[in-house]
Length: 425
Image (tube, rainbow, N blue to C red; front, side, top):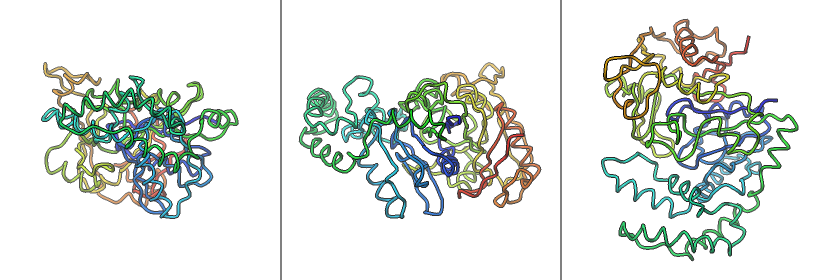
């Protein structure tokens, strides 16, 4: 049984949680392999509507083991809030485990993130101010604290003795009061009391599942255009959402990853700063935003909206290595009489490219569009490929051509059952 990665093929917010929730009904394990509480996966099912920032979207299947992996950074306060919300809705959470090797997002990480973003002024990156950059930078600088260390207070104090002087020096520059060791240690004790039973060495559990040929799903956060190395730097996250990182972030040999589902929205959206070549700063963009309710699951910020970017999907397909595609929110386009699709970029010198250039050039490109007729009918009731309007099928086939990978799922509504599943020939 192949290990399957569900990854973002655009700027994030593609609907990965919705796809994972659907596939997890037939999965044995779901692992989040990177990121923190800076991005939310929205899931709508029989239990209600949830915005999951840490917890894998397979949590709604009580028979599925859900793991927050080693490549993640975890804010225990946010995690406890999510657990309380799920349990209040009657969702079992005893099937959630946390990697002891995942790093802890501390209160000072969030504080530093907000202060740094404010100091950038008009050059702000557009972070969620959840502390993701600072915690990953502390991880790389080897002054971070991992979940498994919460059980060893003396070890945490020793770590804090190294990192707090650095943190407080920066806070002093910003005119902020220092963070006390006792304040952090009080939280550490609380977190260990509430979460300690869930914090385990996840590697043997994952190894056993894969060797036993179980169905394992890997849930990525954000999308290729926010990847630390291959995204629109510096307007990126501080980890690697790429499928190739999934094996590292979860903890297994890369040869077991044989199925990669790229999730794409039927149009383009982004939250935060940085180039979005097909962005529509007009009534059409506003109409897309309202029809798709495009507001950030974490921050509530309105998303920037535009037509589908076929250049970006080609880029994503190469970097991720898609074996198949899931297209979400096709129904949002139901009332558009005309739909455009970007197939190339015009560079400042007038030449065309079908590749994604680095940011200095990407900020200057103009999209080259194809125009496709809409279908002006609801797709919400469709459950088979044949149920979709002919013009919708033609539009999807063009996306498939640009990505070079077959479409296997098409979401036509937010609920779990509102999906067209296309079997392989």
